[in-house]
Length: 79
Image (cartoon, rainbow, N blue to C red; front, side, top):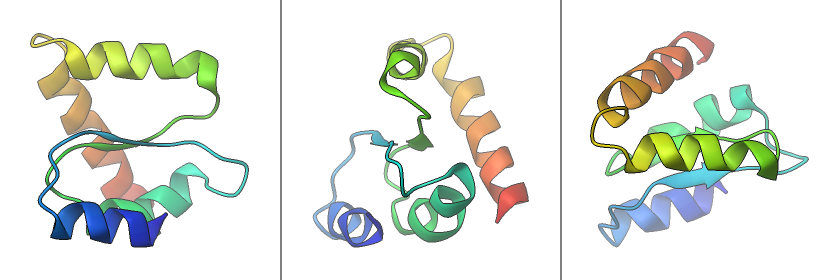
């Protein structure tokens, strides 16, 4: 996943990166993946049923700024 984040950054992608797998945790995402992709939000999603909430927040012009700021603050603290 970290390699994917590096490649997305290198190719100048600007789409949110949702991380969700049995091997990646919020801490893993904050430490190993999030720092490598700064063009767009990187968010760990526990399971697919919660992805809708995250995607909705990322698509909302009203919710996105606070959502991204909160995720960045959480990941900074975790890292």
